[in-house]
Each structure stands twice: as C-alpha cells, then as structure tokens.
Amino acid sequence: MTSQSQGIQQLLQAEKRAKDKLEEAKKRKGKRLKQAKEEAIAEIDHYRLQREKEFRNKQTNVMGSQGNLSAKIEEQTTETIRNLTSSYHKNMESMMKNLLSTICDINPEVHPNFRHTV
Image 1 (cartoon, rainbow, N blue to C red):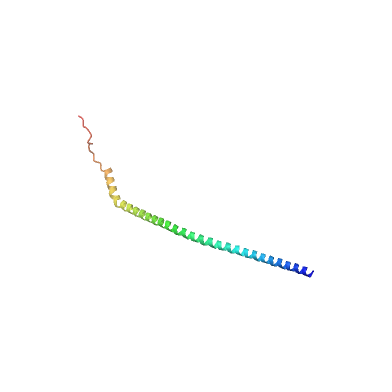
Image 2: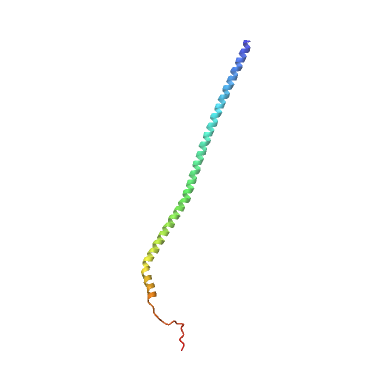
C-alpha cells in the first residue's frame, strides 16, 4: 500500500510540476507577445516619423517654391502698380490740358467733302 501511495504522490508531484511548467510557459508566451507588440509599435512609430519627415521635406520643397513664386508675383504686381501710378501722375496734367483744349477750342471750318453748289 505504501508503494501505491508513493506512486500516487509521485504522480501528483509530476502533475504539479507539469502544471507549473505549463503556467511558466503561458507567462513566457504572454511576455513574448507583449514584447513583440511593443517592438511592433516602436517600429511603426519609427516608420511613421520617418515618413512624416520625408513628407515635410517634400512639402517644404514644393511650398517653398510656391512661396517664392507668390513673393515674386507680389513684387512684380507692386512694381507694376507703382509704375502705373507714377505714369498717371506724370501724364495726367498734360492729358487734361490736351483733352480740354480739344473740347473747348473749336475752330469752325468747312469739311473737305462739302460741295458748294451754286
């Protein structure tokens, strides 16, 4: 009987060791899954940062050139307005005199196509 109870004890101990190993394996598996998930998140974050940096560089290149174009257009527009304003002030008085003299100074004369019939 004692050998039978010793056999049962050994079986119970073996079952307990197996259960402990199983629990330990589950813990290791859970740890490894958690570690793999953290590594994947870190890799995704690194990739996202890299792609965002590339995007910002491309955006800066494109928008920078557009910014330069808009600055050049703005400068040309300002210069054109300044030239037109200068030309207006320079020629306004002479044009007004010319216009007024054309309207006010009437020289009556016979039209060249007029036929005088007698």
